[in-house]
Length: 158
Length: 158
DNA sequence: ATCAGGATTGCTAATTTACGCCAAAAACCA
DNA sequence: TGGTTTTTGGCGTAAATTAGCAATCCTGAT
Image (cartoon, rainbow over all chains, first blue to last red; front, side):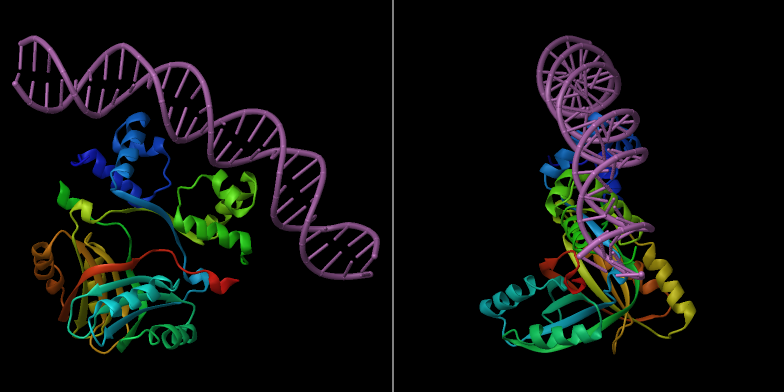
């Protein structure tokens, strides 16, 4: 499958908003009967357009009150430096995002979700700054979440 | 509902990984029979621990090849400045995250997902820099996604 | 240790949902 | 326009979800 028609796009948009919608309701929403709707969903999964279905939790209710961005610079840009960093960060459950980015002072942008500042400080000291090659570290903290979604725009497709 | 026991945590962890798991499989995974399992899921939803269920899409397959972080500074920190900014950014489908953050040079950190650099440049010029009060704008681009999950750690609860 | 009181579990049954099969309709291409 | 391919929608079967109810487990107090 290569090309997506308007119905496929509407299915993807609906599933981005509510992945637990029943196939019947989804079919009605996109103007299809249940049979072809479930077929298309399965095709979208098999073709890799849908990567996974996840539940989003309320972080503050779960005592995860602090979200932080950490800008990290490495001393050298060698494969072993990157590999070491990636290996550690991938194993940290506190890390929800980690990206290698362009820019002047930072190589990595890391987003962590933790209970509080005390936890964060320990994480920074015991984990991040222990990684070989990590030199510059600069943190900023989220005061207010204005937008936080996983849904991407599909407008450019139609 | 206030306190979560080990079974609740295992349910939340499983749903963070795969929200479309059948109730039967979920029940087996957490060591429960289907009935109490579905009851607990519903309670976790009603109590607000589970906010929503979403599908995550393959961005590059959907021609969304560029992810960018934009650091934005405002000229003044007045309510009308913040309100104007939030209103615009909330309406942009390209914006997947926008946070008011602490820090020296930036007030907002905005994450956008767009098809390419040309689209990004137009978005920056026509949308972001048009918002009253926006002064400093600095962009960095994601070269490699090392970690990108929505699942948060629940270790601290038990 | 024993015994209520409350909460949680597991079974069963009824409703709802999903999925494969097949003919009909639509779209596509020469 | 005619023939081919693809997609659709309805039907029937199988499966899953959800509510009701009795039994069990846990908790806390005497």
